[in-house]
Length: 400
Image 1 (spheres, rainbow, N blue to C red):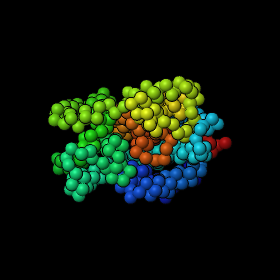
Image 2: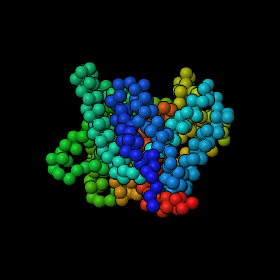
Image 3: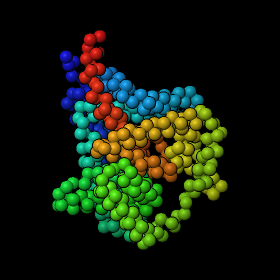
Image 4: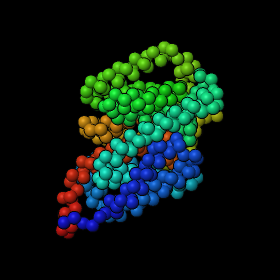
């Protein structure tokens, strides 16, 4: 017999979570202020997720049984971050605790949506692709028409995607998603081509080498994890366009040199080995000082070295385990739309975090698109496989 409706299955909870995730994905560009963006996530994601946890024990049990390695790595990673509060140098140690809880609530939303609404994740990313493409178009209008900026000046987005680099990564992710939603009709394809053109154009005009390289890597890897002739045609077309674009506009990308990245990396590695196992602790402020830039940088411009500095080699290994499990989940589900969306996101993020996005426990921001969003998508896929086994688990629980 079926038990009474669990809290996360209730219609109002599901609709609130859907709205909250959509706000997270599209509000990054359209939110009038960061405060409103954070408040929207609190009301649409964290609060309903906390309520929805009531009566969801069977969901997490089946999730655990389905992929124990992934769940163990993720729980161990969060536990190690929480444990580091005993030696952290953060001025407000309770703030990192709150952010760890926020991350876990954010991740919990994906399985709770997936088991009730199997197509919700795909729908969210499709709508977000359109919403972010419109934000890219509006950014182009403001930059070139309203503010009359010269063509060679770096393009910035709107809202929390205003930073050329981070905004470029958000739009690059939307472009990767958009390549998985190409419709069949001729007219529909023409319209969708304009959507993709706005996103690709935005990324190029930001002149962010990291975003362009990450997008290119993700698209060129498509034939490996996406079967069919379309993947080869897309990869070949983008490779050709990238080659022509680099020949025409290489001065945009080469004039800033390497932006201190090699020096920052070397000094960051040295900082890791000053506290090799424990790290400085989650939430600890630090500065990476180089010979060429003695005032220092407030982060390492590389997610892996950032994790190593904050949480030591133990934390770094745990994060790599989480990321590898995320990749493996996508690979196993590559025959599905959601699996390809995940793999495209992971490929892009894996390159992006090598030179930027050195933040993982901060408040929801563009960096979350490159870290926690792919992990959440992977958990949704694990939940889909586990949901097949949920009825049996529920029946066993009802007999106890």
